[in-house]
Length: 289
Image 1 (cartoon, rainbow, N blue to C red):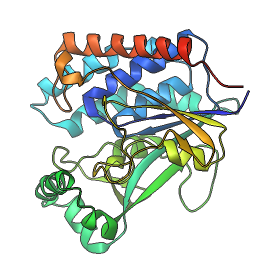
Image 2: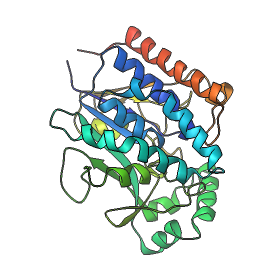
Image 3: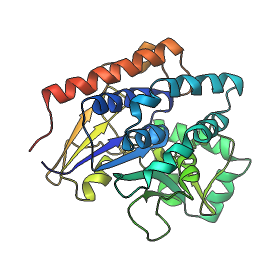
């Protein structure tokens, strides 16, 4: 069987669908050689990498929803509380010799002026401006000030290793959307923002690393784009590497789950839909020899 990588897309609360797919794979005994996460999918992806996607389950998302209500909509606090609860067990298992490769995408801030903007008091304003730019598919600010960094549990070079010491920082940095997260993100004392600005789903990136096939799990029913600005679509084949994309059947808002809001009933429905789509995929496609 060809080596397998699973890439998981961003989507904030819509990431509950991704978690459902990963849980279905776990029940079916599907194990990847590498897992890649971005933004809200990071902790779900990490749970899948250590075989705890089902154990953590939809409760993780329900707890996040309760944290959102208790923190008066402070998404930074929501993510940090999740990391505080699950980070210890993840760090304990992710870096054992037998653990699969884990890659977490984040957007590095590469200019001094952008560091001031993204980590200071202007960050929310900038975040709103970038959302407007995304609607126009205008990547000009990102192209000047950001670049994708892939933190990797199996390599140690260029400061991009993912390890016990920086896992919490990387997990938070990967999620930090500027318009709704007020606490700055730093990894190895360098500024970062949400992966989605440059890499919403590291599917092509995993294909570039040499895996024989990639499963990409999206949070949207239409095209899966490589970044927030919808500049490039994730293809179904990249240089002879098949990329199988699993999508929900509908916009998850129809089930009661949006990016930064959700109902508990909606979370359960979206999670169960993910489980269904994961099982459907394996029954229909399976893994190619």
